[in-house]
Image: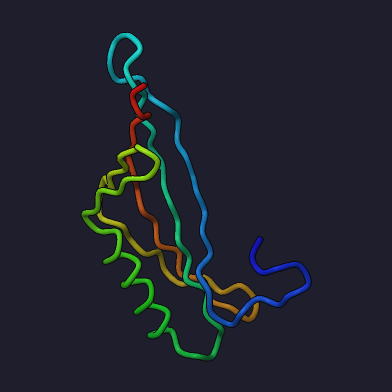
Length: 110
């Protein structure tokens, strides 16, 4: 859990959200299923500390994931199109810039 119980949030941080889509069986039989969805990394920044810094961090997140193929626990994860940033959203004393990263993965073969 972030932050630890009883601890305040830092002034600047990244908020992560995993948004899976419906699983697809793209071949006949028992072949691995395709997993699709969105991974969202929101840049959270204090109001009044300049939007340029937050936009720069959002650009770094986009550049980090652009054209990537990742591997984890035997699963190949492909970033299926270029990540994008939404416009800034103000939430009280913080501004949030959501960066959306679309992905495709396949179940590992047994």
